[in-house]
Length: 241
Image (tube, rainbow, N blue to C red):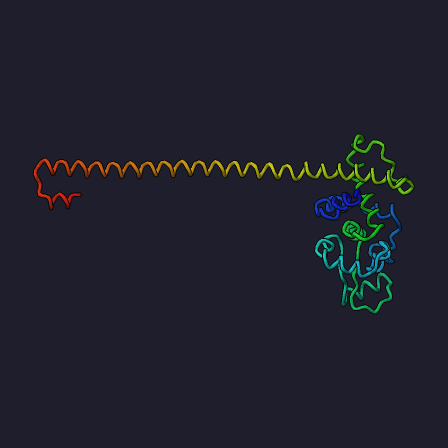
């Protein structure tokens, strides 16, 4: 249940993922990430090995979140660019294209990959680092240090996760959701005032129309009475009415 809370913070929030997207150092806190000889990139197979999932799981993740991953360093080389990269990186491959991930992309994968214990540990460390960066000791009181978390009991880790997740969600709500709701409330109030003003104008117009009708009817009655007093013929009176 606590794990679901953590997943709700990073798995479901692009804003939160973007906020912690630079924390690539947490990858090495969980396990070593094997890079290509260029010291920058990782292949799809390398990413799958890091997270201990099938290569197809990474392919599916890229298919579902390609735009976000591309904005965080994911790319596919082919043609002359691939040939040049193979030469520089000393990669022996006959593939016509090569998908490459940077450390930032791998971190992005960790924040999206559900079926991986390694990814869950990375997410936990991300939230812990984010909480420590805020330097709010009251919210983190009693939580074990990051280096000792793997040796702590499952219950203590879950409790720490719960505190961190609650704190992060509270901050996101306070900095993003509440201002948005306040802006919406102001817009609604402004629109309501406009509607009230229009309603008043319509009421005034209706009263003017009614007053005009009443004055017209009164003038007709007065004309008929004068005609009767003056002895006008009945046919002419019908024309006046």
